[in-house]
Amino acid sequence: MKTLKIIFTLLTFAVLSISCSSDDDKAAPIVYNAENPLDLYLSGSGFSQKATDVKNSGIYEYGFSFKPTVTGKITSFFAKIPDANINLRITLWDVATKTVIKSETMNVSIANMPFEKTIVPIQLVKDKEYFLTVNSDDWIKRTKTDGSATTYPIVAGNITITGYAYISSTATESLFPTNASNNYYAGDTSFSFQQTE
Image (cartoon, rainbow, N blue to C red; front, top):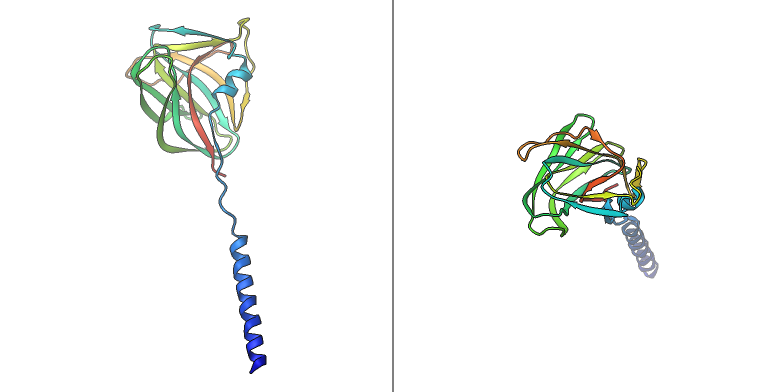
C-alpha cells in the first residue's frame, strides 16, 4: 500500500510538472510599439532644415507614397497645418490601382498644432505601395536650407518613403497626385503604424 502511495505521488508530481511546463511554453503574443514615420522622413530627407507656412494658395491633394517593410496596421492619422480647417480630408490610396482605400475628415481647429484622429485600423501589406494625401489650401513647405533635392527612397523605421507628389484639386474631390517633386515636402500629415507580425 505504501508503494502505491509513493507511485501515485510520483505520478501526480510528473503530471503537474508536464502541465506547468506546457503552460510556460505558450509565449505571450508580441505587441509592437506604434511608430510615426514623419520625423525620420523629414530628417532623412533633409526637409527638417527649413519650414515656411503657406496659406490659401489654391487647393491641392498632396502627400507621400510609402511601403511598409513589415505587415502591420495604421491606427490613426496625424495632421498639422498653418491654418484651422474643421474638414481636413486625409486619404490613403492604393498606388497600384490609384484607388482610395480610406478617407477620413479631421477637425484641425488650431493652426500649427498637431492633431491626431484614431481610426478603425487599416491593414497594410508588407512591400505594397500606398500613398497618404491631404486635401487643403494650406501647408507647411519643408525644404533643405540650400534648396537642393533629396533622394528617395528614405527609410523611416518600418516605413520606406518612396516619394512626394501633388495635384491641383477641389475641396469636394480626391485626385491621385501625379506631379512628383524631390526638392520639398508639403505637410505635415502622417500616420501611426503598428507592426502586427
